[in-house]
Image 1 (cartoon, rainbow, N blue to C red):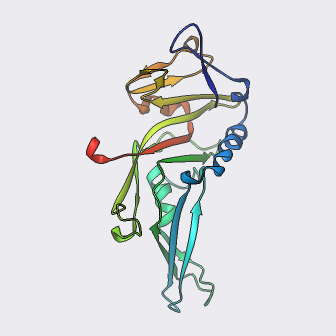
Image 2: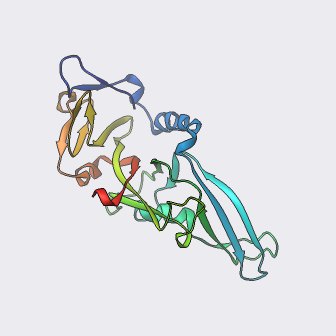
Image 3: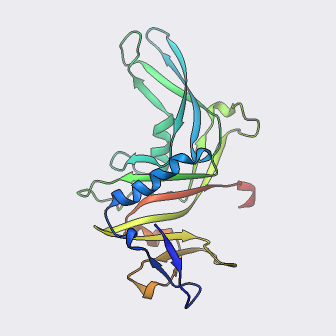
Length: 223
């Protein structure tokens, strides 16, 4: 969602007309990131059938944005796990549902962008927008030497849809020109005179109904 700095002040920003519309406009813009190769997750999926012992190895790509069906799980971490912890799959050889899958992570993108397809008839008041998530490498083994155990990511921003045809956003530690602000800030082009407003935590953003989340890879030794 494009934003511009106002000439009248460092924190006054306004939405472009393209920011007003249905969720589809946002997802169509995010889909342009498919051309950014280093944002994709590359992994090897290894499957094993307990019935016929058939084993397969397939290289796969998880492209940007990662799309989740919001109704199935209770947290961001559960959704991410669901991509890499699969059971009761249909075996191509014996045709039974006895195949399970594991994976080896082949890269570690600096950012994760997650998009949630929401059910408008469902309440998400109990959904956990995890401040920190991780991708767990297979038994700590990978073909990239520094990737062992868990790769952690921290929530740094969101695009929200508090109502139809209306978007706003939140960002952690925003930088405006040479000024860096600390903590979470909220922006809505039709509220607070277009100013960035500091909030205590992302919990304050939950009521704005986030549907796009941005995570950045972190080094836990720095926190």
